[in-house]
Length: 244
Image (cartoon, rainbow, N blue to C red; front, side):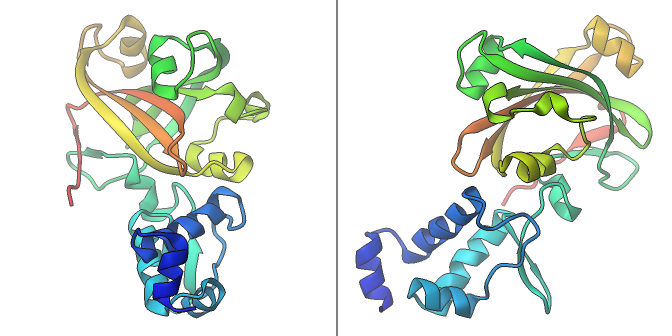
């Protein structure tokens, strides 16, 4: 089948975008797992009945979105969340006097709760719907620098309470255990004063200036699956945003 005929079959959108959507669907449905080697451009071209150039453009788009990783001489693999440089796709706090490092974490509590107004709005739920709520401290260069609250819809994460511990690399376990790949996120930044509880864990005074980052993370189908509210000390760190 020619690309022109295939375009008519798919519709009027650019063909490479529709090929990309078809390939993303394989990630959503678990046909391709994190860390898995995917078929070559030539194999996908034969399978889909489109040109190799169209497949390459679709794969390039997926790589740019950190869904795939190309390894020189080995092929293209499904990206593993919070692995290598991908760890910093969603973590943007950088020490003033150091390199971009991924923080260590210590869980303070993990509870089943009812969604409050902010959680319900961010996650597309109703207030008082059941959620999992996690609170943890994150350290930069062994210094407590962030206290964060993570809220998850209970229905999307059955058995979350059976985890022995909340792992540092949460996005990876979302993908491995529940088949949920984080594809995008939105963030809202605001200056706030430390609460009494925040001050205790961050070793600062109550009312001390903090950077509040409220991130809503979405799966590959743009369903909200996590609200993460981080309160950050920024005397010795800054928020890095790379614009393209």
